[in-house]
Image 1 (cartoon, rainbow, N blue to C red):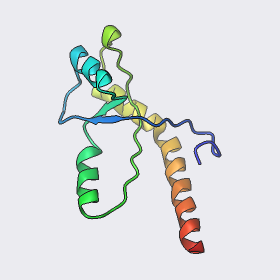
Image 2 (image 1 turned 45 degrees about the vertical axis):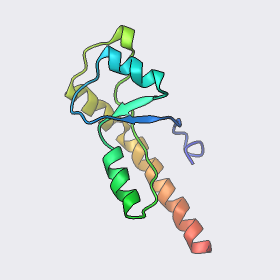
Image 3 (image 1 turned 180 degrees about the vertical axis):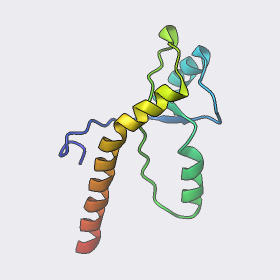
Image 4 (image 1 turned 30 degrees about the horizontal axis):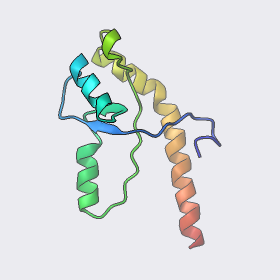
Length: 109
């Protein structure tokens, strides 16, 4: 679906942390060493509750800041929020198309 509507997506391993904070260089290195691609403070608790309730889950995340342990640059909450706002149109289109796709599948069953 993302290719059809020209929105780049990638699969990856999400590392869920308690937060709220930005990680240290050592933490970023550790997360990469154990196979993590992205780090976040959300998604995991919600997914655990949903799965406990028997709900299927599709996780979508917007990467709001790229962190390279050897080249960390200051990041503010405002910068993260601005990046999320910039991605909201694309994410909305992707979710809309995913829902339409699922609705077509359900209607043919």
